[in-house]
Image (tube, rainbow, N blue to C red; front, side, top):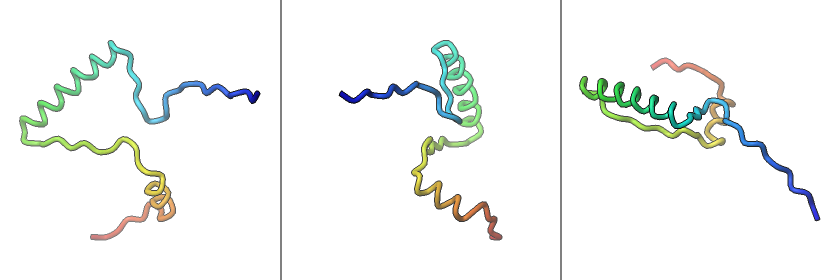
Length: 69
């Protein structure tokens, strides 16, 4: 029988992991900022947390060239 390797759980770089008490505080701060933005006419925008590897690799191949518009 083949031995199965265990994977150790860890937080990925760039991702936030909060315990319940911290999450409650974060939510209160987030709501306060959101309400303030909405008061001045800003509307919500939600973008993906993860990006497809093909997109990231294509961007890396192109480099960080700036274009003049």
